[in-house]
Amino acid sequence: MSRDTRNRILVASLLLFNEHGEPNTTTNDIADEVDISPGNLHYHFRKKTDLVAALLAEFQADARRVLEPPEQELVSLDDFWVFLHLLLEFKTAYRFLLRDMESLVVEYPKVGNAMRHFARGLAAAFELQLHALAHTGVMSIDAEDMPTVSRNLAVIALFSERFDVLVESSQSADDSALRIAAAVLNVLKPYVHASVAAHLDELATHYAST
Image 1 (cartoon, rainbow, N blue to C red):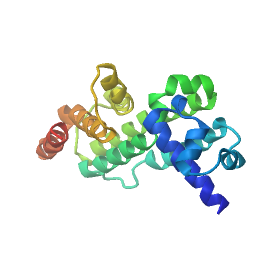
Image 2: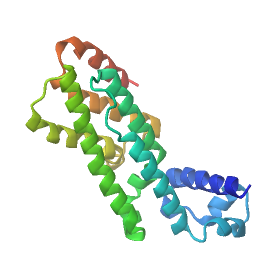
Image 3: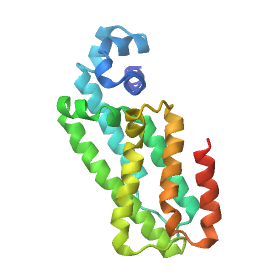
């Protein structure tokens, strides 16, 4: 029962942080969401710092799974599509970390280290995907261009939503993920072979019009 309550607290914390932002969420808000007393919450997590640390540990564990290199030597466009969707689902699940990153880094220095490692790992994961797609023959891209393209893909995946907020584009988390998917796929268009260009264009057009 104690473990169940702890998990419910973490789920509620993540939900509220994502919806309202970590700075705008109090431990009393979380206790109300879980329908427990503040004292009960304090028993499991003495302060909000402990909650953020626990969620950050979950984020890092999930990130390692998402950023695993391709298991097979031959990677198709559909395999890349699966990787992209897993990434965007993961990012949506922990979107408060990116949205509130500046304030979080000041309050919780470990968040900055975790996000720095994740950003580097994401660029590396995209580069591995590009290498695999090139090896399969899905795309043709010079090796010296791969780090730059991979970095651009990581920037799009991580920060497009913040750009949309900056230009006052109101979107749900799901709509934002679809828009990011379209942008990533469009970056690949100049590099894919003619045999898969129609499939890539179909995917990108679908996302852009959703």
